[in-house]
Structure formats: structure tokens, C-alpha cells
Length: 587
Image (spheres, rainbow, N blue to C red):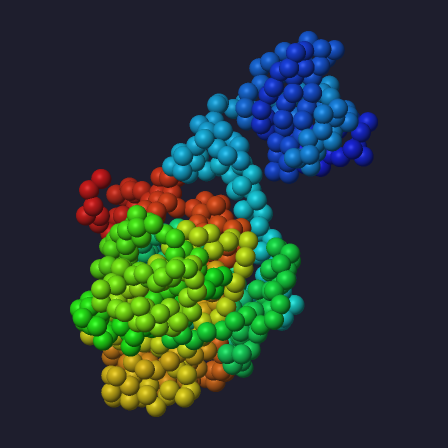
């Protein structure tokens, strides 16, 4: 056998045993007549020693070892005289009797250490080397453990894991599809699934009342730190349920993950907040509730002056930044410049300092001390606090205040990665109106049911009434990141037809694109609903990170490219001919 133990296994109880290990050479150190070799595998590091009494042959082989050589060794386990409490095997070392070089290695392009000297691009190109480093190993171990816990929990609740197809029909509502040409059906195309949405609903029609799948999904969209063109969902659906059944089930799943993976007990029910309140208080539909700094509407308090900026605004909102009244003018100017960046889009910033001696503002000449005091009272400010104010169009200004709130939370270290604040957001709008195309789009997807109490509005011919319909939908938010989203689904064929009509589909279009599910509903579809969690995001947040790349074995970069494989790439003309395709892009 290649090894009797792993490099993370040996302890003081193994002293005196003869063992065989195999792994990669992490580093070599020579001290006097001694040679020390750190041998690494997936499980840890073991220190190997060669002393002056060792054979000439052993010393000769050791002399030619390099970093990342793959070797097999045999030796005796000994207690270390100088113990290393930073590694699990730090109480022992192995005195070598033989070394067998299994494979040599060229010098790697960066150091295989926890803190590597390799830049992001070079590490992406040599991802298989980057994966040898402990931070990535721990990330994938966390991902594995979370997947096992999810499967164990859902199995215990009676869910059945069912695989759904990867080559499906394109239904271009929402993100852009990845398209796959069919050789056997010239001129026709498959799409890669953005989610198994229709399939899991069809499984409910088929009578499989509790389904789940840890499934790969694909969306051809612009990328960012928490988004990849291919990603993984914990996809779930249940029959004969209402919203409460789903929230209770998956709240319990989340608590199980927190407890069994992180050792964190979250007591009581997760907070819940409506979409409207989330926007009004946090300026976001995925609020970070680890800190306060809530948005306060002060429009009625400030519109009576000669300050035209406020008088012409639809909305004036303020946030209270605790303990920051001592911010310098330079600091305030920097924040003002930050909110004026195109990414935020504010035209300016007004501040009020509530210090021990006085209340001072950047708009003192327009407001009396009594006016400023009322603002301080409205936002709940106390001595030592700073109030920041933005104004403009209502929706946009709330979003800008929400963005500023998160930025200040980062600067003031209020968004601690080891603090977890989950919540549910519910009562989203069912539809959103697009001015350019002059039509409604589904806020989530076209299979989301309206809230029962809004059904009359849903069937109204009045656009304003339709716009007020709430979806029977919900999002799971963790630390300001949307981790999961779902809804109670439409299960009635006539209601589903109405949804397609509201979305501007003709009967023929609806039948062509979605006839299979409309027809399925005619055969006794049960009431059903579900949820899907972004598994990559879930893992990253459990690991205390905002980027998901380290939690995916082979991720793409921000341009959707696999640098290691150099993909996507051009294909031979013969392949295109077989698919009846012609490329107009220039190589």
C-alpha cells in the first residue's frame, strides 16, 4: 500500500510505530546536520527528519527533493523535542528510513501556502495548485459538510431527491438562457436550465409531494462576486402547503445547518418583514439587520424652509450614525463625494452634528436650532451622533440611503462575519412595469401565485390595480444577502393563463412556450409551493466570505471565462457544419 496513515493522523499515541506516508513536499529546511521535510496531503502536515546518522543514500535522495514533489516515505514515529501547537501532528515527527520519489514537480508558479504570493489570475490559471492551499481546502470541506447536512435534514422530513433534465426548452422570461444546438434536430436548440422550476411543479402534479435536488443551474448574465454563470441551488417543492408550512420547514433546515456546521444556536423564530417595510426602513429588499441605522422619513419636517433642494424633492430621508458627530469636515466631504459617484447617484449630502454643546448642520442658514432638534428626535439621535440626509425621487433616494447605510456599516465594522442575522422578506409585488417595452414582467417568475386577497386586482383591467397585486412569495435573507427565494405557485390552469395574458403573451405564445404545464394543471394539480437556496452563497456566508469563488472547485472569472481551460473557445468548422451553424465572430 502507498500509505498506512495520512499526514494529519499521527499523534503521540503512535510513537514507536513504523509508518508509511505519501504526499507532497511542502518545504525543506536544513539545520546543521539535520534535514526537516514537511509532508502534506489533504488531511494535514507531518514533519519528517533525517539526521547525521542516516544513510548516504537517504541523504542523497533528500538533497534532490523540491517543493511539490510527490513522495512516499517509511519511518518511525518519534516525540518531537520542540512541539508545534499550530498543527494537529505537532507533538510528533517521523524519523525516515526510506524515501521513494513517486513524481517530480517543476517549481510551482506561486507558493502553496495559506497566504500565497500568487495573484488572482495566476492562481485561477493553475486552480489545481490553488486547491492544494488550506483556505480552499477548508472552503470545499465546508461545502461538502453543508450538502450532507441538507440531504440528511430533508431526508428526515420525507423529501425525495429527484434529478431533472439539463437539456430543456428555452423559456426566455428572466435571465438570458444558455443555448445548446441540436445536431439531430437541425435549426432547433435546447437551453440549459436557469432552475428546475417547471419540472419540480410537474413532480407535484405527479404526486411526489416533497421533492428536493442540489442542482446545477445556468444563467447567461453579467457576473459579480456572488454570481457565476453556472451555480448550485438547493431546490425544493412541497404539495398541500401554505406559506407558513414552507417557512417553518426551511427555517428549521437553516437552524440545523447553523447548529451542526457552525455550532451556532439561533433561538426563536426568524424575524419577518414585508417588502414595503424593508424598502422604507433599509432601502433594500435584502436588509442587513446586524445593525440599526434605519431610514427615517423627515419630509414633513424640512419642506417649509427656503432650501430649494428639499422643497423640490419628493422624499427626504435621514439615517443616524451612532457616535460619529466628531467626523471632520474632510471625512464628511469624502462621504459626500462617495454618494455622488455614478454607482450611487446622489446629487449631494446634508449632515447634522449632534454634539454635547450644540446641534450644527451644513444647512444651518435654512433651519433653526429647534428645526434641527426635531429632526434629531425623529431619527432617535442622541449626543455624539451624526445624521446624514439625502433627498430626491422617493424610490431612488431610499435605495441611495440603503447603499450609504451598508457602506457606513462596513466602515464602522458593524457587519461582522461571525454574527448571523437571518430573516424572511415577504409580500413582494407580483409584477413590475417596464416603461420601455410597455408591459408587465414577473417580479419572480410567471408561476408565482398572487396573494388570495389580491385576486380581484389580478383580474382587473386597470393597470394601476394590477401593479398593486402582491405575490404570495418570500425571500430568505442572511446578513444582507438574498440566500433563498420561493413562493406559493399557481396550480389552476385558468389562473396560469391569466398570468400569461397579463405578461403580454398571446394564447398561441403561451401554448407554444408553456402549454405543457398549463395542460398538466388540468389533470388535478395540488396546491403547492417551494423555495430555492443559492448554495454557493450559503456556503460563502457560512465561511465568512462575500465572494463565492473559493467555495466552487473550478469557478469562472468576472468575464465568464475558465482561465485554466481557456474556455469558452472556438470550435472547428466541421463541428459547426454538423450543427448547421455558421459563426460570424472573427477569431
